[in-house]
Length: 87
Image (cartoon, rainbow, N blue to C red; front, side, top):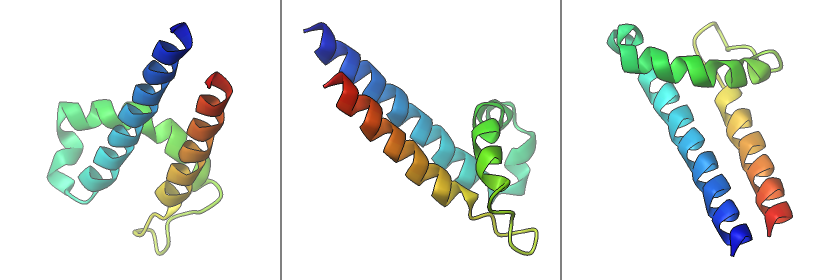
């Protein structure tokens, strides 16, 4: 029973972080959001993770950032690995 709740807790943590990443990506398309407090909160928690991948895939032309695609794949792989170990 404890493993079930641990599994669900870890699942929701990954789900929540995926939502934060998605909000960061969509929010970056709207320049007026850059200065909002909630967007700075999201950027504070997602940018360190995204910066890992930006070292490997720099923005194309300084505008098109493809690193979140790799970040989503890596997060999904880590999620499956961790949840598989719990199960």
